[in-house]
Length: 620
Image 1 (tube, rainbow, N blue to C red):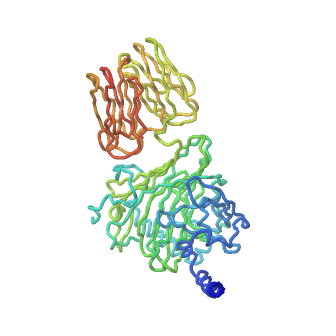
Image 2 (cartoon, rainbow, N blue to C red; image 1 turned 90 degrees about the vertical axis):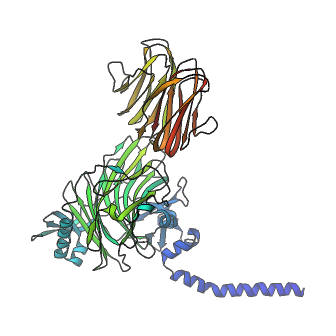
Image 3 (tube, helix red, strand yellow; image 1 turned 180 degrees about the vertical axis):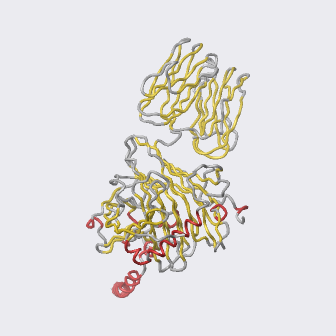
């Protein structure tokens, strides 16, 4: 009895101590910045007192992502979809902050419904009309803004142009962003202007926001070669290209993400190419201060873009501001704003090229791409080409439906090429087979819903089979959009169009078996047709090509023999060690897809018999 009473007293005492300590703990948590809470506290604990459903926030599950997505209504931007753990609610105020993944792996841009309408002023300048928010014009003054613009143009007159020619790929190997490809090479006049006030200036919604259930993203990373160098500006151009869409709903962002040197890395400027299913394209800027998206600071934007847009990002040490200038090269219109930061960043730490895609379940093909080019940066008082100051550090791992590639050229400009598309290049759309009984015989099949495809056929090498294709109606030997008519029975080509594609396998001479495949997209690497003879059972021949992503091998051989096909990345395949294999009992085979990077080897083996073969390797 005494023991039980002692236990009870101890329990009561501990409870009283915990209750006494709780207000101090709660007070300390309440006084911490919201971004600290995000980085140290689980989402459910942080938001346990916030009933998101009462604020118009609707949860929407995301495939493969935790936590889920939510949609909130933000003034000016309309419905905004973002990951749930990026939302902070304080009574009626909603703030978007970077989550743990964003801090470690790169920002996730919220999906906005529209761009805010801005009360702006249009200034007539020597370089074209300039839109400035009325509040910014009042704060900075017209003379200062014109002087800054004149200085930019003087700096860039010799370097900014509209040429997006890509010359030298930085690297073709997709790797982890933490791997350094270049460790060994790291050290390496204004006139008087009038201005006109325009109320509610024309910066409007790109389109109504599309419903989404999934998000995928991929980046290329660029770091400073010398950590003692502190670049404080970046000039360049972003060029959203034509969108091809057969009815899919999606939103895609192609971005230059510029990370500044704030002590916790939380100051970020994003130049965004915003592309929607309707074909409408916008370019706008998002600004993060200490990992918080500044919704109330409307940075420059253009809502209808049909030409490249120049960007000028300047970290101004004199007034601790970030200046952002955009110029639409199609219309000549400029857009400008600046942000005064009390915890000012003094230089660019690193930056990325990012491709982001919000989408629902896919049912229709689409394809879009954007080129982004950096032309100038500055360290101290000296200007440099970006590749002199920044080096390519690597890519994120491959993700579906998005891609980013990195390039440089003889001017040491840095390029990133961004793609969002469905289906993925290299997806096998259909596989067909049959038998042609003699010369002049043919077999036709069709596919629909794709804009650009690669068509391949392998057949009896003791015959001569040809391949034809036509969009909209069946081809003939005299009426076609694409054809393959070599002396072998391995034929292939790439064709682009819309509607239904009809494909015909035709016997120019002889009879025998055939197989045919349709693969989405255009191959980046083609080994070319390799021909030869296998002398008998067990004999092999091996070839190789270099590239990355999805690899396929194809083989045609004589009927009555059994040839097998093997592929392997970065080492020669064997019959027991391979990445892909084709063995059907015939001499016509496909092996793939096999995903990887580096050198892809492909080997044909005679399981039984001898005779001529024709092989090809394609990498998508």
